Image (cartoon, rainbow, N blue to C red; front, side, top):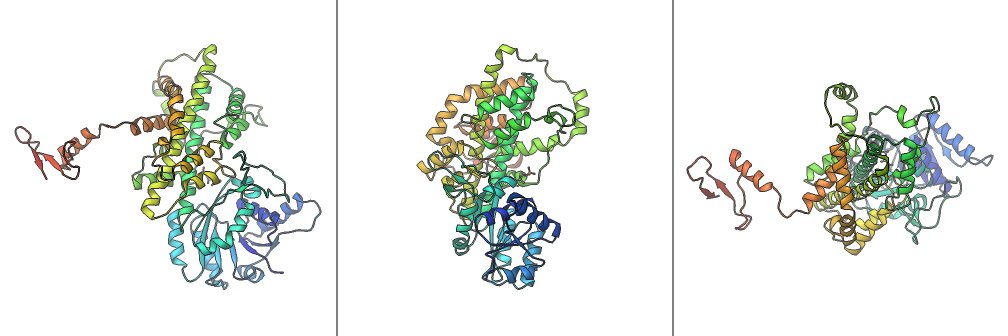
Length: 503
Ligand code: 6PG
């Protein structure tokens, strides 16, 4: 019999998505230019399932793939973002792909590339995208999926994505976690929902990654304070994170951070974190989010700070030199008896800052949606992030509820629940940021979130002086508070009495 799905790319993500598909009863024919990867795929399938017959079928060429998959074809790509996606599309076209065949790009593609591709392949193939989050374990046992593109194609893809996606227990809002090959989670709400027209799914995934960057950075900041000011060991910090994971901060990233901090280096016996070089890498999605925010004029400072923090981390040589030359404050470590109090402050700082990061991310999606004419369902986006993805957290249920209460909510900070949460936790947040600053410990994401909050809640900002400066040197004009805003004025700065002229 013919296969249901053709799958191209058996790298880490591809291999696990394929096994997830076959677990769910789909017949998959896989192809990869690197045959070794196909062998690894077959091996993993066999080793996971003992001596049962192999389930994955592999082939040797694009042409063979098309002959072995039912028409109209459904072909899923898991290849590196960028040129490889076009390369594979063109190879498939050369091999005889037809206009009613669907190609789904599951890579971390730049959303504007997806829009371009959809235009480029119009009439030749149906180009659809699905952004995937959750790393290799997510891909294997249930990722969060953000599909976008042609609605008719979606009707065909939907059952497949619903089957393989992570599932949430509707009663608790918590992920249903089962990591057993051959026994996928069938019950629960799938973390896969149609996002909108082509481009929108990858935009939403991009913002997911921006939030991921900020969330990771902020966890690193509280770790740094505990390490530097409280002089706690990685193991002690792991204990704190485990406690936090029982409450509002419950999340995958807190969970894995605890596990990392509890791990010893097998070679030296030191805490593993202490033998890891402090230079952070990045593949670009956080940067795209920050750039995207700047382009649409959306304030997303904490996301941008998280990207900058990674950049600064890579200047290791310069930092090492600067460490010997630049003075910091002379501050004594926090005494032991104040430790719990400081930990509680850090908890609340992380919580409030996290709310602000999500407010920034959702605001960015809202602005982009307005610009692009997408109708994004924010409650649903938060819902499909509750399980499977890297930023999965208990807290996403509250975000989903907020957008459920008011689908047109202009900013998450204006939702009653979050208004109250920040009101009651902000004292500790301010204290944590202030003490870190006085102690010379950088907390760029958490402090920028605080500035964002404080600027957001101000009816008046010093932008009046800024407009005056612009008018002074560049005759850029300004509006007056006592006249209609569209009326523009300019001060004749050089003239006596500095008369104001209406423009
Ligand atoms: C996910 C991740 C995943 C990947 C990113 C981040 O949602 O599963 O975001 O897509 O880990 O590429 O990578 P960088 O930190 O290297 O940018």
